Image (cartoon, helix red, strand yellow):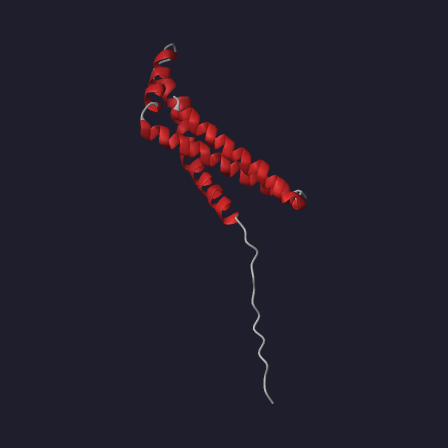
Length: 128
C-alpha cells in the first residue's frame, strides 16, 4: 500500500507593516534617548546659565547651537521619527478600539500625517 504525501504550502499575505514598525521603533528610541536631554538643556540649563534677566543671551546661545549642522541633523531625526512613532501608536490604538475594518483609511491618515509632519520638520530645520 502506497502512502500519499500531501505537501502543505503556506502563503503569507504581503504586508508593509515591518517598514512602519521599524520607523515606530526608531522614533521610540530617539524620543526616549534625546527628548529628555533636549528638554533639560533647552528648558532648564541654557536659560539658567545665562541668568534670570538675560533672556536674549539664552536665545542667542540656543540659536547658535541649532545653527550647527550636526545639531540640526539630530533635531530633524528626533522630531521626524517621533511623528512616525506617534502615528503608528495612534493607528494601533484605534484598531484596538474597534476600527479594525478601516485599516486602509487609518493607515493613510496616520502615516500620511507623519510623512507631512516629517517633511515640514525637515523643511523648517533646513530653512533656519
